[in-house]
Image (cartoon, rainbow, N blue to C red; front, side):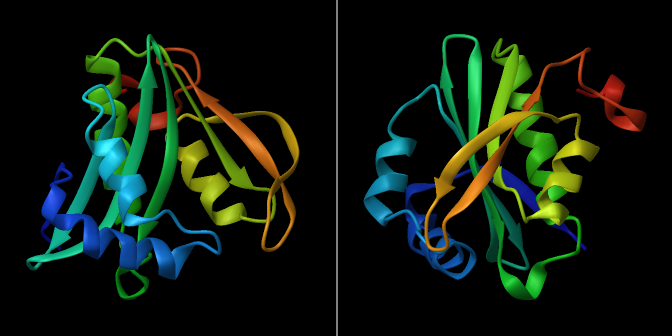
Length: 158
């Protein structure tokens, strides 16, 4: 598999929105992605496989903190390591930009996503009650800090 990860291009927004709509019950709009891309401190990436946008990851940055907004992979490409590639690259770029900690929220029932984030050094920090709607559900708040939360083989690369 030859996945190429790069900073999201404006012309990829339509493909990203389609993946977003497939993956989330309350999806972002195209305008939401365009607004995020116009903020130069943010990091939004796409994964391209065989010329097709296969997934994306977004991170809002403010001062020395980041928040991963969404990670999603098109259904036919899931379970092939694309999300891991996206997370590795967003972390690499974030640490290089001077971000010292990254937060995210994930549905409490989404154990595969929680396991993926833990593989990349994120640790549960708390619960946000009724954070999600459609269906209503609590979120697990997770945090990653280089040199503190990292584990396993990825520790040196984060």
